[in-house]
Image (cartoon, rainbow, N blue to C red; front, side, top):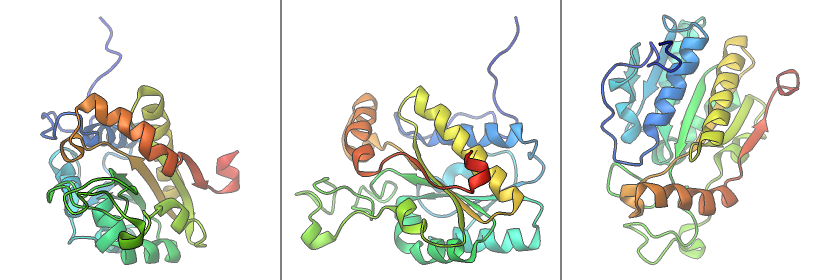
Length: 249
């Protein structure tokens, strides 16, 4: 019988440890599939910071670095400048990239660093107990906003793609989701485009992935996917927010 679906070479043959319904594993596989399809297995380098996203280094079968909380873009910048022929990406959560790492993210984009950020947005600090993140929606209940996020007290949720789009150094910015098969396919295409643009040397690229966190949302896996579709996508619309003209055709 012909095999039509196998484990990517870039992904280790071990079970994911993530909570049931967590979509980190889906994104890990997409990244691995794209790296294999680009034949970049021997030239890929990833940087993981702090948070649930840090565990990606357990699953990728190529070199991974761990950075201090929020500093993954700085570490990736150093790697790419020393090894410009490598495919260099960071894998960061919203509590990391949009909070303590905001400065690193913004300035890497402003400088046009030729790296890719895979930005996982699940609207909450996941690993540390479900506290409010910069991306937490208005009215969303977390352990630090038990009555729901209040704009008058906590401000508005941060939209990362929209924030980075005006910067001249950003070359490709896209927001995708992995809550159903159609969107998983679209997410893979966005990751491939970001990696292609990076290797062409056009500038900074970022793919924001709307992701579920059933444990901290207090929902079942299926309920979490529905909550993402009904609540996150209306505030964080999917699509490409910036792309080089010749790539977008």
